[in-house]
Image (cartoon, rainbow, N blue to C red; front, side):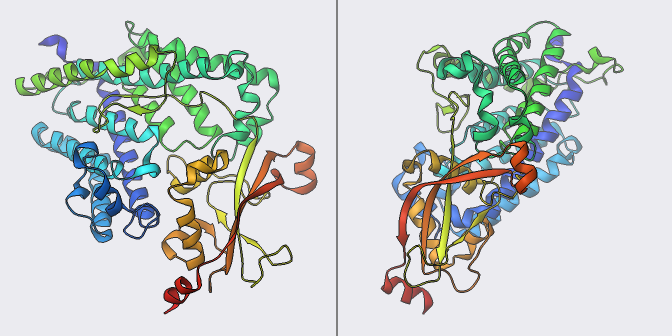
Length: 479
C-alpha cells in the first residue's frame, strides 16, 4: 500500500519519538525520587491501601500483584533506563518486531504507576503521555516509513489537546471572552517561572493580544493540521511557537513539551527546503494490519472525547477508560484573580502562641520567601508543590493527604523532607506545626527596586491551628 508510507515525515517521527523517550525518562525519575513520601508503604496515600480498595479492572497495575517500596523503586528506575535507551536511539538499532515491544513495555510500566498514583497523578499530562506513548508503539522505527494512519492519529491527539483547551476557555470564564484573563494568569498560575514576573508586567493591551492569539491558536489553527501540505506544516509550527511561549512564561510539567512533540510529528521537512527523505518501505503486512487496527480502535474510542467537546458541560482532563487510551484535555477554563499560598511553619517552643519562634518550610517550586525568585522546573514535575497550589484554592483538595503531610513534618520524616527546599528543623523536628493562608501578588517595578522582593504577601487566616504529635505517638517515634 503505497499510500500507507509517509516518508516525508521521517524527521518529525524522529523528533517525536526521541523527545517522548526523554519525557518518559523524566517521568520515571520523578516517580523514583518522590514516591516514598507520596504513595510509598508509609506515604501520605499508600499504594497498599489503595490496591486493597480498588479492584484491578478499575485500575490495572502490576502493583496489584505485588508492592513494596524496594520493588517500586526498582520498577521506576528500570523504566528510566529503558527510556534513556530509547532516547539514545535503541529502537532504531533493533528490528521492527523488537522495537515495538520496547515502546509497549514503557507504556505499560508508566500506566502501572499512574493507575496507583491517586491524586498525585491526577493531572491531564499523565493521560497525554500515556496516549501519546501508546501511539509511539505503532510509529515504527528507521526500518520503515512513518505510517500515515498513525501520523493522523497524532494530529487528532494534538487537535484534542488544543481545541479542547480552547473550547473550555471560551465556555468557562468571561475573562477569556473579553480578553482580560492574562491580566491575572501569569501571577496566579500554579507555579510561576523565572520570567513570569516580567510577563505579568507586560502592557495590558499586549495581554489582550495574548488572549486573542490563544483563541486563534487553539480554535482555528488545529483545524489546519488536517489540510494539505504545506498548510499543515505551518499550522504545526504555529502551535510549536505558542507552546514555547507557555514554556518560558510558566511551569507546566511536560504538558507544553509533549504538545510541541506532537505538533512536530505533523511537520513535513521537505516542505521546509530539506533534501529528499530517505527511502523507506511501508513495512511488512503484519505491521500495516496492526496500524490499521489501532487506527480503527482510536476512531471508535473517540466518541467519548468528541461528545465531551461538543457538550456545553464540557469537563477537562478526563479519561474514559482505565487504560487512558483516548482522553479529553483542556486547562484553565477559569482563571483565579487572586493568588493564595499555604505557608507551613513550625516551632520548637512548648507553647504555640504568637510569641513563639515560628520558622517556615520552603518548597522548591511554590512561592514562599518573597525574595526568592521563581525557578524553572518544567518539564520535571514537582507533585507536592502542585497539590499545595490546589490546597490554597480549597482545603478539600488536601483531605486525603494534608494531615499526613503535617504529621510527617512533626516526625521529621526524611522522605518527606527531601521533597522540600529548606527544612528549618534538621534535628530535632518541631514540636508544633501550623498552616497559614497568605495573599500573594507580584511586586511592582518600584517595589522590586526598593525591596528586592518579587512577591508581596498579606496574612489572610490560619488554615490549621497549631498541631503536635500525641504524646504516645511522639514517644513511639523516638524509641
